[in-house]
Length: 196
Image (cartoon, rainbow, N blue to C red; front, top):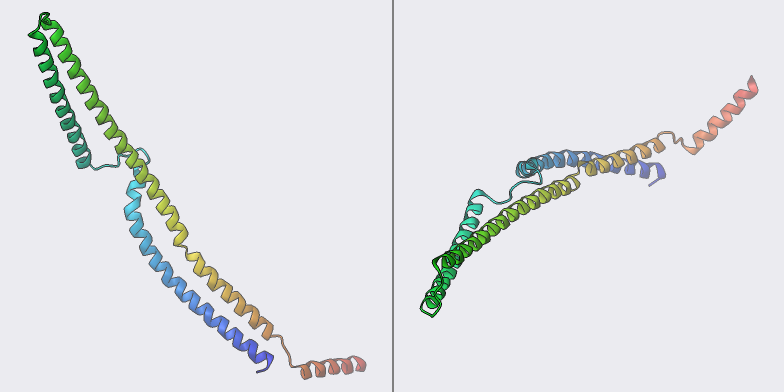
């Protein structure tokens, strides 16, 4: 196979690769647009709410708060029982507590219980917002990662490179003139220049 024929075969292969890369780029672009729309339908609502959104559903918040109330109520009931037993034991002794002192101790216990419940409900709310921030950050990271993964320019670059290679090879083939023709034209040019 002579040099020109080899270059023509190379140009043909490069052109075929260019055509295939262009075709695959078109298919990949359409598939990527479908995937992008699916991801956007999931993550756009999260991103639209911003970083200060709640992360739990209303049902989750209600369940967590309900557990807080029940837990605090159980703890209060146990503490109140212990306090009442202690007060009853002291009342049977030599120095009984006045009614005011008993009322104050019970009020302090109730206040401590309410404070604990409030603290735990605040923790639930803080966790709720932390989960929302995490969802926002994860959505942003997923969309950023997706933009790197779904990259139609990768296929387009391959097609463009193949097209440039085929063009270069075809340009190299085009101006080639057989060696004997080049010598004959050179001689004819010399004779012609001698005539004039």
